[in-house]
Length: 104
Image: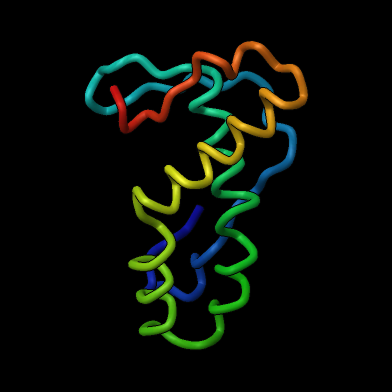
């Protein structure tokens, strides 16, 4: 996802269509789980994209404020915990042991 507030052309550009096989690795070399990757993708798609579209044409400062307010650990952690609760309630036992990538 394009999230550079100074680049209006690239802002919010993302393709969430089918992509096939994907290799995911953390820059710090720590383990990453399937649940963490799914949560990160859903956070971008479901948690951020709508807001990014809304502020996209409002200028660089509005985009920068959006980044500061919404693209942060706290918002992701809240999203992750909500997603985890919903998945467990739906009977997905794999989420019972899921933890945020910030916890590693």
